[in-house]
Image (cartoon, rainbow, N blue to C red):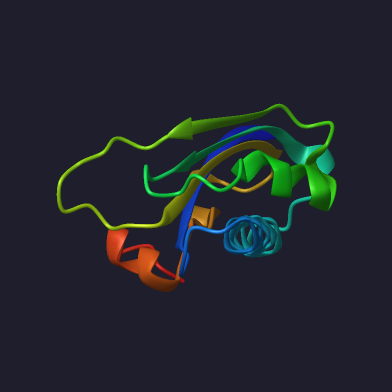
Amino acid sequence: MSTRAIRGAIQIDEDSKTAIRSGVVELLQEVMRANSLLTSDVISVILTATPDLKSDFPAAAAREIGFGSVPLLCAAEIDVAGALPRVIRVMLHCETQKTADQISHIYLKGAQALRRDLAQ
Protein backbone atom coordinates (compact mmCIF):
# COMPACT_ATOMS: atom_id res chain seq x y z
CA MET A 1 0.00 0.00 0.00
CA SER A 2 1.08 3.53 -0.77
CA THR A 3 -0.10 6.85 0.54
CA ARG A 4 -1.52 9.05 -2.22
CA ALA A 5 -3.14 12.47 -2.45
CA ILE A 6 -6.10 12.89 -4.78
CA ARG A 7 -7.23 16.31 -5.98
CA GLY A 8 -10.59 17.41 -7.22
CA ALA A 9 -13.00 20.30 -7.54
CA ILE A 10 -16.57 21.11 -8.44
CA GLN A 11 -18.25 24.37 -9.33
CA ILE A 12 -21.72 24.76 -7.86
CA ASP A 13 -24.58 26.95 -9.07
CA GLU A 14 -25.24 29.05 -5.98
CA ASP A 15 -24.23 29.77 -2.42
CA SER A 16 -26.78 27.75 -0.49
CA LYS A 17 -26.55 25.00 2.10
CA THR A 18 -28.26 22.60 -0.31
CA ALA A 19 -25.94 23.41 -3.22
CA ILE A 20 -22.79 23.14 -1.08
CA ARG A 21 -23.85 19.82 0.39
CA SER A 22 -24.91 18.41 -2.98
CA GLY A 23 -21.63 19.51 -4.55
CA VAL A 24 -19.50 17.98 -1.81
CA VAL A 25 -21.42 14.70 -1.97
CA GLU A 26 -21.11 14.51 -5.76
CA LEU A 27 -17.40 15.34 -5.70
CA LEU A 28 -16.43 12.97 -2.89
CA GLN A 29 -18.52 10.10 -4.22
CA GLU A 30 -16.91 10.45 -7.64
CA VAL A 31 -13.38 10.63 -6.16
CA MET A 32 -14.09 7.47 -4.16
CA ARG A 33 -15.71 5.63 -7.09
CA ALA A 34 -13.06 6.58 -9.65
CA ASN A 35 -10.26 5.45 -7.37
CA SER A 36 -11.98 2.32 -5.97
CA LEU A 37 -11.73 3.59 -2.39
CA LEU A 38 -13.58 2.80 0.81
CA THR A 39 -13.78 5.34 3.63
CA SER A 40 -11.48 3.04 5.62
CA ASP A 41 -8.79 3.79 3.00
CA VAL A 42 -9.03 7.54 3.61
CA ILE A 43 -6.46 9.13 5.92
CA SER A 44 -7.69 12.74 5.85
CA VAL A 45 -9.57 15.23 3.69
CA ILE A 46 -8.95 18.93 3.16
CA LEU A 47 -11.87 20.85 1.65
CA THR A 48 -11.64 24.46 0.51
CA ALA A 49 -14.32 26.81 -0.72
CA THR A 50 -14.02 30.04 -2.63
CA PRO A 51 -14.83 33.13 -0.51
CA ASP A 52 -18.26 33.48 -2.16
CA LEU A 53 -19.44 30.21 -0.53
CA LYS A 54 -20.54 31.02 3.03
CA SER A 55 -23.77 29.07 3.61
CA ASP A 56 -22.29 25.87 5.06
CA PHE A 57 -19.13 24.01 5.98
CA PRO A 58 -18.19 21.52 3.23
CA ALA A 59 -17.07 19.04 5.89
CA ALA A 60 -20.64 18.81 7.23
CA ALA A 61 -21.73 17.09 4.03
CA ALA A 62 -18.73 14.75 4.12
CA ARG A 63 -19.67 13.62 7.63
CA GLU A 64 -23.22 12.88 6.45
CA ILE A 65 -21.99 10.41 3.80
CA GLY A 66 -19.73 8.32 5.99
CA PHE A 67 -16.61 10.40 6.62
CA GLY A 68 -17.44 10.86 10.33
CA SER A 69 -14.30 9.08 11.56
CA VAL A 70 -12.03 10.69 8.94
CA PRO A 71 -10.11 13.83 9.95
CA LEU A 72 -11.65 16.68 7.93
CA LEU A 73 -10.49 20.28 7.53
CA CYS A 74 -12.25 23.18 5.84
CA ALA A 75 -10.40 26.27 4.64
CA ALA A 76 -11.07 29.33 2.52
CA GLU A 77 -9.53 29.39 -0.94
CA ILE A 78 -7.35 32.43 -1.72
CA ASP A 79 -9.46 35.31 -3.07
CA VAL A 80 -7.72 35.94 -6.40
CA ALA A 81 -9.25 38.46 -8.81
CA GLY A 82 -10.79 36.70 -11.81
CA ALA A 83 -10.74 33.24 -10.21
CA LEU A 84 -13.53 30.79 -10.98
CA PRO A 85 -16.41 31.46 -8.54
CA ARG A 86 -18.37 29.01 -6.36
CA VAL A 87 -15.76 26.26 -6.32
CA ILE A 88 -15.25 23.57 -3.72
CA ARG A 89 -11.88 21.84 -3.87
CA VAL A 90 -10.70 18.66 -2.20
CA MET A 91 -7.39 17.05 -1.40
CA LEU A 92 -8.01 13.55 -0.11
CA HIS A 93 -5.14 11.52 1.38
CA CYS A 94 -5.54 7.75 1.19
CA GLU A 95 -3.86 4.38 1.23
CA THR A 96 -4.12 2.54 -2.07
CA GLN A 97 -2.47 -0.06 -4.27
CA LYS A 98 -2.63 2.36 -7.21
CA THR A 99 0.48 4.05 -8.53
CA ALA A 100 0.54 7.83 -8.84
CA ASP A 101 -0.15 7.50 -12.58
CA GLN A 102 -3.24 5.38 -11.91
CA ILE A 103 -4.90 7.92 -9.59
CA SER A 104 -7.93 9.72 -11.04
CA HIS A 105 -8.13 13.39 -10.06
CA ILE A 106 -11.72 14.59 -10.44
CA TYR A 107 -12.80 17.99 -11.81
CA LEU A 108 -16.55 18.34 -12.30
CA LYS A 109 -18.87 20.84 -13.96
CA GLY A 110 -17.31 24.30 -14.42
CA ALA A 111 -14.27 23.24 -12.39
CA GLN A 112 -13.09 21.25 -15.42
CA ALA A 113 -11.63 24.57 -16.59
CA LEU A 114 -9.18 24.47 -13.68
CA ARG A 115 -7.41 21.36 -14.95
CA ARG A 116 -8.41 20.53 -18.50
CA ASP A 117 -5.56 18.01 -18.53
CA LEU A 118 -7.21 16.04 -15.70
CA ALA A 119 -10.95 16.78 -16.05
CA GLN A 120 -13.34 13.82 -16.08
